[in-house]
Every structure is written in C-alpha cells, then in structure tokens.
Length: 454
Image (cartoon, rainbow, N blue to C red; front, side):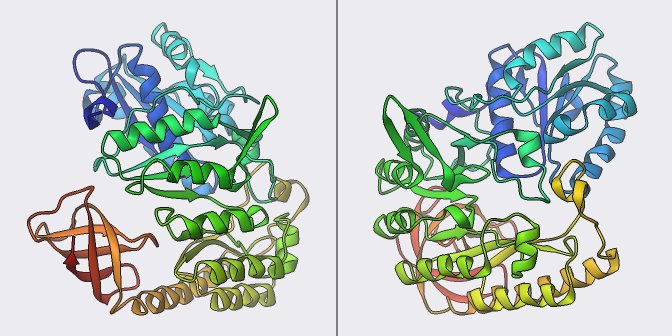
C-alpha cells in the first residue's frame, strides 16, 4: 500500500480547511472529520484563503486554550468579508461546552459540533449553507468512529495516531473531559489492528495508541475480553519494524502486566507518560485522582525495576484549589524523587462545570500560581538537562522523522525513550529509516550525536 492512499484527496470540490488545537486526540478527530467530508466531495486544503469551509477543532482543558479560539474567530472575519458564503464551524470540546455562547457572541459561527457528532457534519454544513445554524452537541455512549479510516494529515509519513477509545470515567475535580467527551468506551480491537496494519503497509514506522485514559482500554464481546496489555502485544506483533507508543496513562490503571509487555517487546517504546498532577496527598485527594503519592511511587519503582532504560514524563498543576506552600514543596520533592525526563506544566485555571467549580474555591492568587509554576519549570529544566547528560556516550536506535528544522544538512528523529536527536546526514538516510546514533552533546530539550551504524 502506498502512503498516497492515506493522504487527502486532490481535485475539484469545496475546499475544507481545518485548524486543530489541544491534545493528540483532537489531531485524530480532525483526520476523522476530513475522512467523513471527503466522502461528501470536500477536498482538504492547507490554504485558509481558498477555503469554502473553516473548521476549528477546539480544546477546553484550560482557559487559555479557549481564549485562543475567540481570538481566531475575530481573525476569521476578514475571510468572511471576502467570501460571504464561507462557513465557519467550531467543533470539539469547546463546542460541547459553549454552544449557546458561541452562537450568540460570534456572528460568524455557522456550525457547532461536539466530539461525538462528526458523522452528522455533512448535514450540519448543508443547514449552514441554507442560512441556518448547524448544531449537534449530543454525547454518545457508543460512538468510537472505529470503522472510519482517518485521512492522514501529518507531513512526514513516519508517525501516526490511532484513537483506541473515547471519553473518561475518572471525573478528576479539575477536568472538563468527562463532560465534553462523555463516558469511556473502547474500540473493537480488530479495527485497531487493521488500522495499524494499514499504516505499516503504507510506510509508517510508528503508531501512538491514544485515549484519555488509555490503559483502562477494555473490549468485551461474546464472552471474549481484550484489555490494554493484550492490545499492545497484538499491535507490537504486526512487525518488529513498527514502533508502538501510547498516551495517556492513569497511575491507578498502570498494571504490572502492561509493564511486562513493554519489557518483553523491543518495539514497544520505552517511554511512559504518567501524569502525577501533584506530589501532595492532600491535593491528590482534592483532585479526586484516586491514588496516593506512595501508590504513584510504587508504580514508578515497578517501571524502573523492569525497564531501567524507560523514560518517564508527567503533567503537573501549580496552584490548585487550597494548595499550600507545603503542598507545592511536596510536588517539587516528587519531581526530584522521580527525576522526570520532561513534563507538561500548567498553572491551575478553574473550568466551569467541574467539581472544583461547584464545591471548591480557586483561592490561590494568580501571582502565587505563576511563582509556583516558574519554580516547577525551573526544576524540570534542570532534571531534563540531567537526564539528557546521562545519555552522552550512549548509543540509541533512532527513527528518522526528517530534516532538522535548523539545518537541512542534518537529520532528526526520536529514540525509543521519545527524545529528539539531531545528527549529520550521511546522504543515504531518509524519513522512516532506522539508524544507530552515539550521543555526544545535549541541551535540556535535544540530544546531538553521530551515526555509527545503519
């Protein structure tokens, strides 16, 4: 199978432009949207000025994410003036959360569609073209888009996302996901395996299995059951040349069986993203995270004992409701104890409709949130640099993603641990090839090395 068979179709048809914000799940959803609309004759474009339809796939996890969308809607007004027939749609989590506000406060919004209503998009666009608003934000208990073949919008043809489940049952007190994406439901494993096979046959060499809580995946039908460790094992068995990653894990569901599968399969990448959010038991309870610091560290130790070379990354929140200076110090001490390779770090922003919004007080001053966040960032920069320095002198198999953005004479790619490596090209390698690189230098974000073998 050729890569072109998975790419957007060319030719005549109304032009569809899609902007994607937020998590990797949204990237996958955008590819599903393009697939659905291609079947209706639309053709994807990367040139917004030629678009007949602009769809913005949105995120509501933080207030900043939503403010960016409001800003973009103002910018879209100039395209609407040039083309009065232009249709603008807001889809995804923000559409689910703010349907009425989007329609009442932004006169250019014609379509509002939640994450479970993408099959309905052709009808919604027809309504908008006829002068009405197209609106569908109904959540589903069954929709997985499992049989829809996504149109791949990535540029390199090396790495692709596969959504294996949707929704979340955890109801962390700060999080809007269960309200904007609904309850957990898992895809049929056969459709996941078929998608992974298709990607490998088309030349992709890495897939990332996605879910809001990916390691709680479970498919049950006709008395049979497939859980996440078995699914990972099945995908890894497609070919030793296919790398397998996954995101994002919840600490309470990270099983010893999953760790054992990772240890036994060389092509299951040795990298786990394990969000801690806080190092304080008081905060973890307030966040409804369903584990303690001790439980979290037991999972870290289980990873370290079975997969010593595994990288561990995390998410951290600064300034959650009621967080004291001592709670913050506990987060810093957890970071040092684990020695994270990298982290996504945020200051808390209250999200309407969550448990924190209903029963807690956002009582940490903004200046203090920012101060604590800056301390977390500074410490993580030190930890990331320490982690990368420990790799100097080691050799790693690198999957090449393409040319370095800063120097076309160099290539870049990732290790199994998901670290970016930059190295001089020998002229014989290209995106999708594996090579062995010896690390000679680093920054806190990047490794630099030399090819030693193909």
